[in-house]
Length: 84
Image (tube, rainbow, N blue to C red; front, side):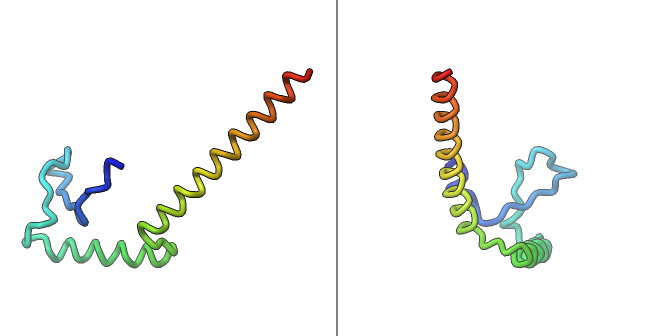
């Protein structure tokens, strides 16, 4: 949950700021670049049927189900080995 309070946008000039310490997203000088990148991201998300946060939450739910299946399989395998 460390990203729960991340800003909506982050923009860095990586060539000059390789450690990404100076967030330029709020600087109006970069509005056109931020808008260009935002539009490109939105188009890509639509092409991938990515619905943002709801897609991530659904994936987390599937991950929990998958882990439970793995635990059950592991337990069955252990039970089968003990019977030999």
